[in-house]
Amino acid sequence: IFAGTGICWVVLTATSQVFKPIIMPTLKSNDPSKNMQKLYFRANILLCGQAFLLTLILYIFRFKILGLFGDHFKHFGVQAYLIILPSIVVIIATGSASYFLQFSGKVVALIKLSASALILQLILCLLLIPHYDLLGAAISFSLSEIVVCIGLVFVARKKMGLKFCWLF
Image 1 (cartoon, rainbow, N blue to C red):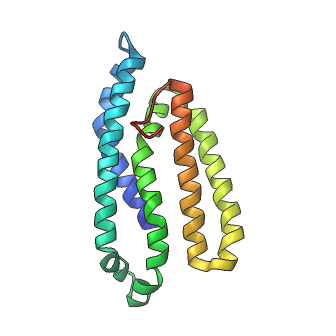
Image 2: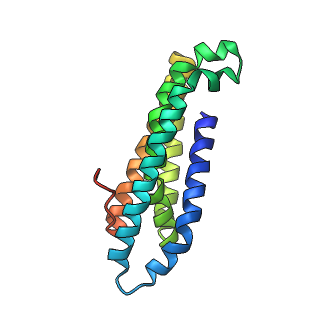
């Protein structure tokens, strides 16, 4: 779970460093909504492409990656790994929404979504881990992250009028 989150963080941080200097001038431009939508679209395309490539690499090398944690984990952890993989795609693909909300001053919405993700994950962990062990943790992580990421996209659309690529 932490490895998946770490990978997402690295990809999103690198991408944000590319778009950060562009976002502020766009907000101050004559037509910020039109320019912001173009920038948001470009960021989403870039992140979706990165998510696809990263997922492909992680899927192909899943046994080698899991083998880093020991041979017993190579076989035991592959199911949890495959459960988490789609959430990594969603986190990366929708990651630009959080940056656009942050840079446009919509931090309260981000805090509310993060708090709701924490509560959702805690509830799911309490319900699923006693019955499904590692798979329960993977399911709770994946579901809570996917819900929050989709929430970010909808908040970016509602608060800023930004449309996420062709998906929403």
